View (cartoon, helix red, strand yellow):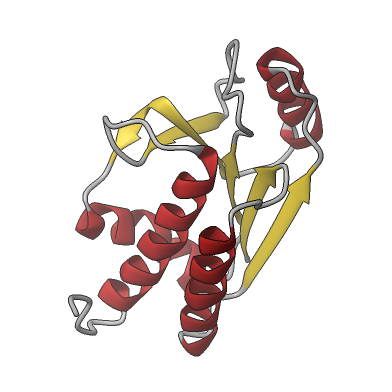
Amino acid sequence: MFIIIRIDKTREPFVKTAEAHYVRLLKTLRLPLEIRTLKGNNDAKKDTAMIVQKFYEEQNVYILSERGREYDSISFSRLIAPYKEQNRDIHFILSGPFGWSGDFPKNFKQLSLSKLTFTHEMSYIILLEQLYRGIKITKGQKYHY
């Protein structure tokens, strides 16, 4: 199961439209996807502590962070392929509007979408798009429009 955890709800209508689009595309690829929204604390330190507490015991946790490892689309597809093929859980956790503060446990992996900074809502859409692209790549399908 691909599990996306995000802090706070989507507010912008264009983000909701993009979310619906990519969720629909991912369903056509039969990607087992669950999206969870957690209520934030309006504080980066408290949000970070909450995530560490809730997910400390989980395996395969990827925190989206500017400090994370960057992947191109091909290497990202290689990262996610075993989880889909073996039907194993993978968690992608996005911060709220205040970002992260503090350190994460060593078992949490950090993933960066870009050296550029995006809002948490844009990061969410980019992650959905890259999941779609990555699954297309793993299936050997054309992934450029």
